[in-house]
Amino acid sequence: MFNPRHAAVVLLAVTLACGCTTARQSNTARTAREQLLISNAVDQALAKVDFAAFQGQKVLVEEKYLDCSDKGYVVGSIRHRLMINGASIAAKPEEADVVMELRSGGVGTDDADSYIGIPQIVLPGMLTLPEVKLVTRTRQSALAKIGMVAYDAKSHQLLGAGGVSSSQSDDNNLFVMGVGPFQSGSARRELKETTTPLPNQPIQPLPTTVAFNAAYESAPDRPERLQLTGDKSEEK
View 1: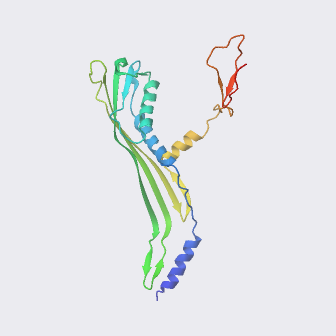
View 2: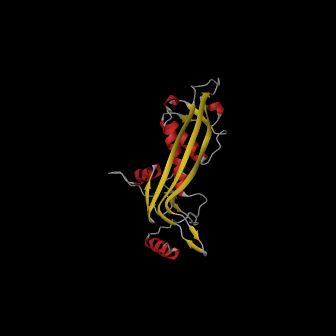
View 3: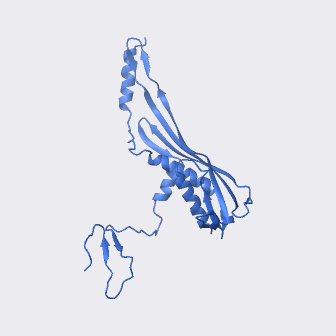
């Protein structure tokens, strides 16, 4: 005969035998992982755009139609890719040869959780069997959809059809009986690639003491002097 108390004892023993992992929550407004996912999706979307057509052109990046999360990163990444391909950035419309307008169809994150196990069960007699999670999977993903159109700054003639570029990044964490996380996804790959030093890669640490040179040119009777942060002494 089924005995609820015996079942509760068995499930409690299984629960105690399982491992347990607790993730520390971020104290910032947004977690570093969320920001990394969005920037990864933006990078993947822009990697599919060929900016070589703007070589030798002065390009004004118009961002007034761009309204999304991490707008600064999106604009800065496009400016960077334009300069890598031989374009220069114009500050004003009258200085530009080309105007590139940006827009966003969506830049954000989603998350989903799933598990294999036994849900919480309430039995007669005010007895409750606890939830048991054998395998837990958490997934957070980011989507970036960026639209671009370019036209001649003087004639306003369209330069090609423009278009949109979309990409998705993801971060997956798997826990087996509380042990984990076992990680996978594009965010994990980017971290591994960018944090692992390459062979013979030069290391350039910054000085641990802050110092500056004076803006004036040194003269024979006025030798160079380093102005340390917080140094209020006057030159003699």
